[in-house]
Image (cartoon, rainbow, N blue to C red):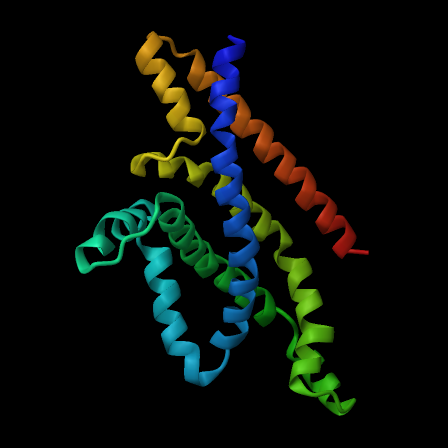
Length: 206
């Protein structure tokens, strides 16, 4: 039982690596694109980007990057393909979440900042963004939880993450215990993420 648990837990190394790479890059990227999407020159281009990545399955995107790109001569390692796919997909969601948060701020605050002589950049940085971020923390938390579960998709390209390791034991030993262990590990990870974001939300409301 211990060996089984340790082998499945070993897969969490890949899960955590992909999780943190995706989160650390996609959140700042999504925030940046949210601001850029509110400008006329890039609004349509970024609109197409978010429409595509939010409107097609993440699994299909992963297949395209890992199996499709080699057809045109672009070959990526398993981890690189997974990272690029997840970052592009989640950045699209974070873009829309952050854009909604920014647009939810009352227009009067823009006018007040203008009266005080603040530039557009300063207004966004010091007044609009902090308020918008506080409003979208729960939505970002939901996406962060979804990301943990979505990492299980990388099993289809042969990466030894939690689910794949559990499936190997099930196939070899004809027992369903590994699936319960995998579920427990996912629950523990998501519970930890909820606690972290709850603290972030409490601090941002101070």
